[in-house]
Length: 97
Image 1 (cartoon, rainbow, N blue to C red):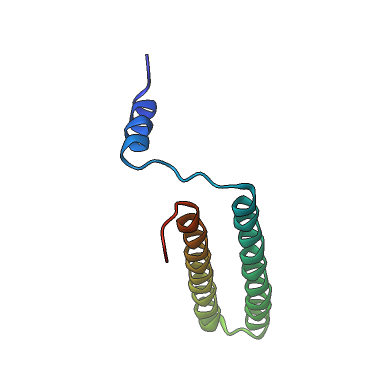
Image 2: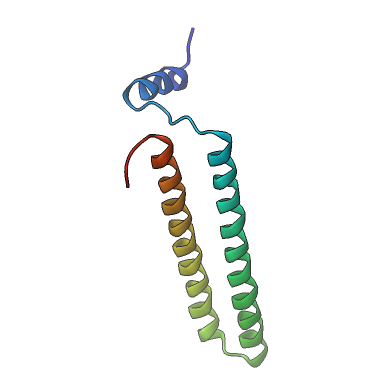
């Protein structure tokens, strides 16, 4: 007997079949993941340094602002990554940009 999850996945596959990626496209997606992980790490290092400095001097109200900026920048970088990955997937599906 199939689980509800398995049945849902079968229905999803029928309505929206997955895109087959070749090795080059898989490699491109992996490179994008790596590049954008590095971008996130770079921003975290910079902003965490600023947060530490602000805490040392007692500017705790500004710490919250910088933490919010870090969250916003992470989301923006993630959105950029997803956009680039979607372009790769669209090319794999034969869609024109």
